[in-house]
Length: 160
Image (cartoon, rainbow, N blue to C red; front, side, top):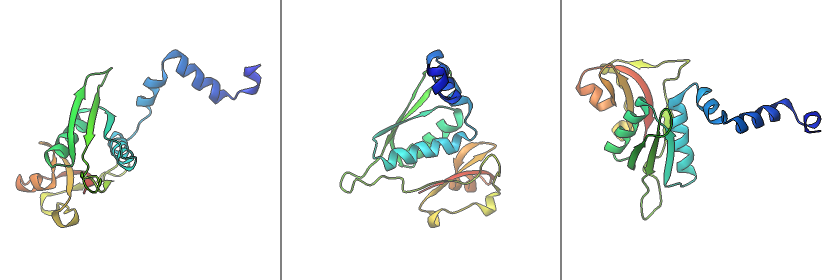
């Protein structure tokens, strides 16, 4: 009876849930992990969540460390869970105004259109008040660190 009334998509989703493959499929379909990371942070900020969980990768760990060092997040913790692990991020809010330390997150370079810059043309975010996260041959760093080391790279995102 259910086969006649249900669509193939519903049956397929039920199969994935029952077989335990839905969690695996969720991670395989993602095409831009950095955009997913920024979107999860943005959604948690908009919903005024204190903690957000993000699937871990080495690049996301580096970005999280930079956000912590620059004071945009309160704390973070890497949890080994499953094949890749999870990053738990405690968001930072002002105690009086309840405003988040992160005002805006913008993805610059994407898998379809990479954006590279040299150290002489390094972007300034809000005249130096924000940061640009750059992926270089020496690792992930901020625009200011890349300029002092005189190294260019791929502009991943702007945060302010």
